[in-house]
Image 1 (spheres, rainbow, N blue to C red):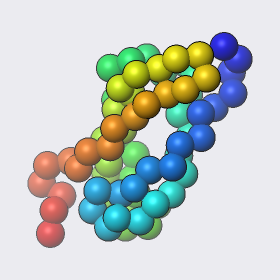
Image 2 (cartoon, helix red, strand yellow; image 1 turned 90 degrees about the horizontal axis):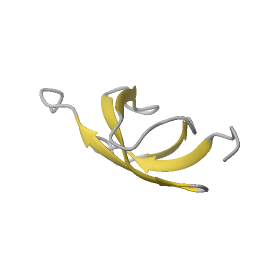
Image 3 (cartoon, rainbow, N blue to C red; image 1 turned 60 degrees about the vertical axis):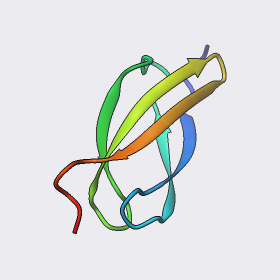
Length: 68
């Protein structure tokens, strides 16, 4: 695998807007991190669910306590 970032389009679980994020190729399955929505600025948990040579599956979740 090369060091090219994975470009993924996600939908914010708060405002439902879609935007692109980049996933590091060194990310491991089971790893998670927090990234703010580019539209509403609320924190989103990004979870690396599975990874193959040229494909990565992620899940996005709300962070408890950040709902209106």
